[in-house]
Length: 439
Image: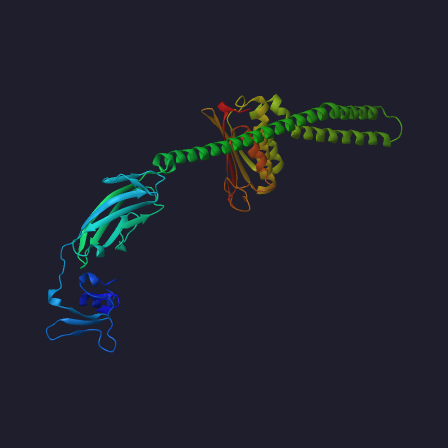
């Protein structure tokens, strides 16, 4: 094929494969002044760009005469060129050449110079190279004898270069050299390990601090609740004492005076009746005062002990409600600090009040078992249960007094469990460890 750059020879099969898309490029061998042409510019004008004579020679018109090519005598080099890697430089400074070249972290821009030896048109030797680990395909460098790289990450790489002579015979073995780019300190495994440990430590420390704050807040809240309940009980005890000792005594005096005056009354018929009414009202007031005082602070708790106080309260609830109570209590006296016994009493009292107000139950079972220093309290009714299924961990339904029961159970270090569903009754179970009371 002739052109204004000389005459070129290619394999017909390569041309067909390129046309079919099987090849990405066609290897062409060029002929010019080095091969004896007077000028490289070929121009057929009105004549054909080239003709083949009867003897097989090819004639090509040029700008300075005719060039004749004898295909039978065209030399073909079958020996592949010998490839060599000449030098490596980083940031325009030479680097000692070795089987494995190490570059420091700042030498991320480097060049590799290579060449190939051939006695046939060495200037037409073509090269391909790739840096394995960075490039997946060969880079067609043409006749360029330098490979340029910039901003290569740290790591170990293999640089390979191959070459082909003028006639397209490739040296596929080529040459290779190992390039190792040393990491910055923050790219090393030990730095990643330290960073991971530091991050883990920071997360763990933050978690511990957060947990400590939550625990401290929880303990503070529990202590505040305990102090509040103790103060409420102290105030109830004071009011109950004043009602019983002061107002109750004065009402008793009024009743006695009315009875005495009624016995000695001499004037009219209405006087004794009015005094009798005063006496009756005073008796009712005394009973109400005693009831209020009992609700504020049950006197049985101080006089009879925790177990009998609870039993007395349950008998009274059974008599007032008509509900069948099944009660089985192991001795509870001395299991809790004296100032904390009121909390267990209030738990039972609040649970019974809930049953009487909300459950529509006909049977109630209350047991308190003492085993290995633990007190297991269980209160069960066969009533209508909660309006919806309840699971522990959910907010307590409003209006059932369960929050107060839970707070008092926590004060005593108890673990509360509540089971209830519509139409299936309610069971409240609390386990106390009387050997490890917090208050």
